[in-house]
Length: 390
Image (cartoon, rainbow, N blue to C red; front, side, top):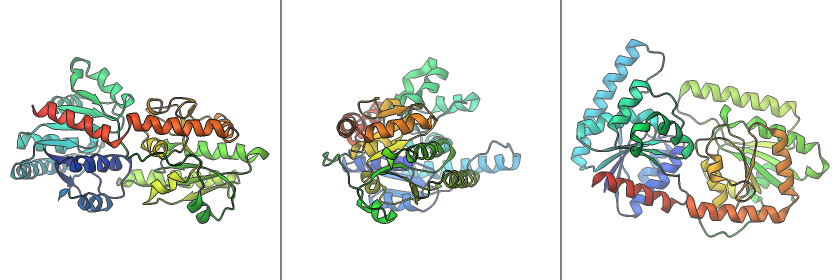
């Protein structure tokens, strides 16, 4: 098949871009020809190009909710221009199917499919709760809606109850190597933070934004610091403010400044350290002794399956799609959203029970292997493509 992916982010890859890249790599290895439309050059562009993806650069202005008539007119003209040019390009390249990677660019995928007379898939990676007339129009014109979790799919099932057959749940996938280790020695992190062994490294990894609830982790580490039994436990927060939206970036920077204030107020300078975003993030995740995800309404939690695939035990807030991945006390540990006291207790419980820690790490790896591998994700997407193209 010849598959065109449309996505609105070409810079530093976040979870959505990582999942897209993983899927594309698998599809290429299976003999499919992959094309992609991106709004600009960047790290995601470079990665896709290195895998042999044929890329076309086209601007994709985002419609705002301020309803400025001039901005709406500009967006509509840009949308029409995009659809005509991309539609002609699709015909020239003999594209079989269009796959829109995220909701913000679904309009561009739909207009392109209308011009090129091609089927289109809407891949939903974040919560959509307000549909209205526009949502119904978009839903009517797509051939399938792919949700990355049942939590994401639930509003679609409820709102579009009369046509649920379009909605599919396909979990993101990661590459999974044989489980080589469960007990981890954090050499690179230790060197970067200048911490002497033996220590137990607990980390939060990902974009710094308010719904990630990183302050809950800081308060939990403060509780641990007050106990002598936890003096060998160190915390790290690995990540930065990463978004292509100007207003969101300002909000994320403000949230990061708030975290720095909390960090200083709780006197965590020697207990929790911040590390900027790393390109080889999997290496850093693999060096953790435990990963914590305190997020609110996590749409999937890719970092969870990345950690589990590396044999790193996970503690995560019982919110969003997380319970679809983590089975409490079996493949990980769940704690009540926002409850730093419970989080501290669970960290200490696993720290003092190495046998339980090892079992959870092993069972977490097996669950990732059985449900969240890149091969399983690619299998499910191929079946969907074939069912639409029949």
